[in-house]
Length: 161
Image: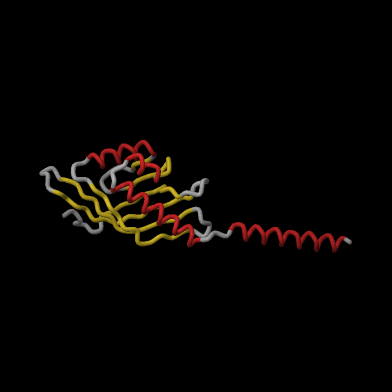
């Protein structure tokens, strides 16, 4: 009788563990596609200079790291940075995401690619900076993806043209 209870308990534990394992499986391809869609929507908002559309793509505690500027941390600091960027004469931004990698758990991901930022210099002439970027994404409780870390670096040492 004790053996039967022990075997039944073990069998039940294995069944529960097996069921839990199946419920934790994530369709990484679907998550990657969701990030690509989110990234495309973010790019559309950024190229339209729509502050209210672009801000929600960052998490409330997100950090932006760009060369020559102290870390930009939190939604209010990001709002100020983006507002100033959009107000810069000749400002435009675009990027191309070349890779998205989603963690096995499906709750974190990164994307990498290239970017181009243009603006008018002090003399009024257009300047363009080519860069590389990495974005760390975190899945939110509502299923959406938000940027938690946005890092940009020059594509090469003399990227200003």
